[in-house]
Length: 337
Ligand SMILES: NC(=O)c1ccc[n+]([C@@H]2O[C@H](COP(=O)([O-])OP(=O)(O)OC[C@H]3O[C@@H](n4cnc5c(N)ncnc54)[C@H](OP(=O)(O)O)[C@@H]3O)[C@@H](O)[C@H]2O)c1
Image: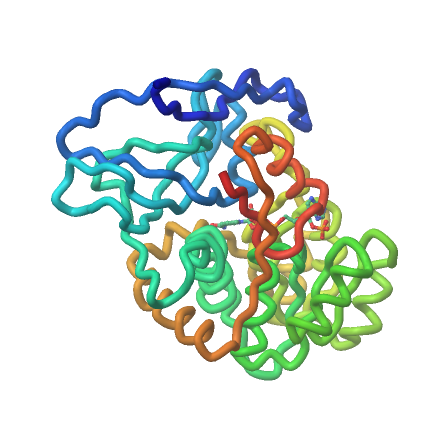
């Protein structure tokens, strides 16, 4: 009988711009005997996140991956073997497993999942750190959306964007406008998720449409995209506006330590006594528990929806990651391994 192998995806070489297939290599490895305190997990789903691309550079905020190292990724799965008194076979857990089918980690790195509150994959989506918690803190703590305000969200049909728009509505925004690529995504936002309007940046003039939809200006811009779109919105902010720098996915294909395309119109902040503030979700670690409880409540009350788009096969990790940068996903992009 042949021993079961772990299949993993490693960084074969650093990309020059957009990563292609030659940047990824699939490898099989034998499983070593478990050591005391270690847990072995059958990985079920991986969270496909934009930050993963940034780790392909030598210097990166989330840590640059070494060439030939397993690519980083958060995931959920089930314990298959345990040498820890904290976890038993069958337990559902979440951890930074990496892009692989079987993960072996020290027990301290695992977070138990309570499957009674939501299906396992929700721990990567609505309740996930890089998705639900990010949207929650971006809207509540950084954007501080107030009742009656006008909120604009970019990459609005993506995982964080879908939730940011819905949380802004829950917090009383009078008008939530999503910016997304394609008429189908825009229709989804307005018909299914309760956005008041959506702009297809691939087919419409965003500047003109925003002036029509928000003639009095924008109070909060939840930015996931950066680049030229940030300037378009900055030009239309109101007095005391808040610009939330959640991410800048248009700027991730390169060495970000050497600079990205920043806003030309940042002086609108001075002219309108406005504020631009960035954040990483980890800055709010002390409030995770309370935020999760709120997200669970909204999920249970059907106040929040997040479609899951599930691709298949660890071999397709690189291609699935690329989908994020080509707008191939609506909602939370996951890879079932
Ligand atoms: N601050 C934090 O702690 C934190 C944590 C997690 C995520 N984030 C950030 O949140 C953002 C969204 O991440 P996510 O995981 O939820 O991904 P996502 O929104 O599900 O997917 C990314 C979406 O971005 C859009 N996009 C890609 N390239 C673009 C470009 N050049 N111009 C305009 N739109 C583009 C695509 O949709 P279209 O079809 O609309 O183009 C794509 O579907 C990212 O910027 C990420 O870095 C920040």
